[in-house]
Length: 217
Image 1: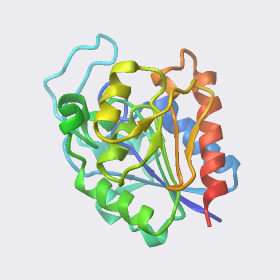
Image 2: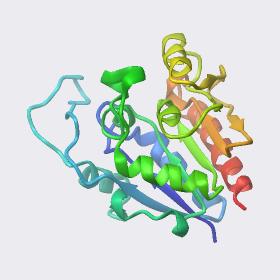
Image 3: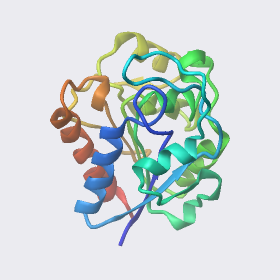
Image 4: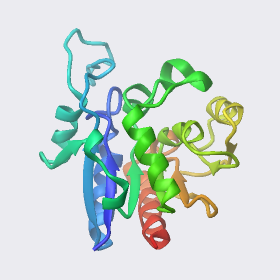
């Protein structure tokens, strides 16, 4: 059975992993007779957002602890992840990807990447193992993998321009489709960067998971 690493960035679209994207990813992996192995960085979130009002809260939360809500407790520190134990890696989106897994939300083209994610992604790439990045998460790829690199975050022109500035080749893509960089074994899909409904996001994510598994050696 293929083991697919899934990296979460918390729990909740505004300050962690987008929950719909995360759950659809886990479900698609299971339906393709593979095993999800969940990880998250063990560190404080950049911020905590009240998802009812959209306002910042004064409390502090831990990314790993919050990710455990999605993974039903079955999640390990990202620092423990090893490329030789996994067949592929998938990273759902949500603002946590741009806040907790990177500083893309504030740094844009000058952003930095969470070191444990960067090390794992690069190790997977060197080993020739496929990568699937969802929603805003693909924006991190150009800081981790060498150019040329084809990817998508959907149709947002401003974000696409930043990705191009970072050295990526952005491809416009609808929510229900994927962009595949065959040479780098990288699969991306816009999900809620474009999707208006959960079924639209699911269509692209399900294609992404299926293609990632097809690319597994």
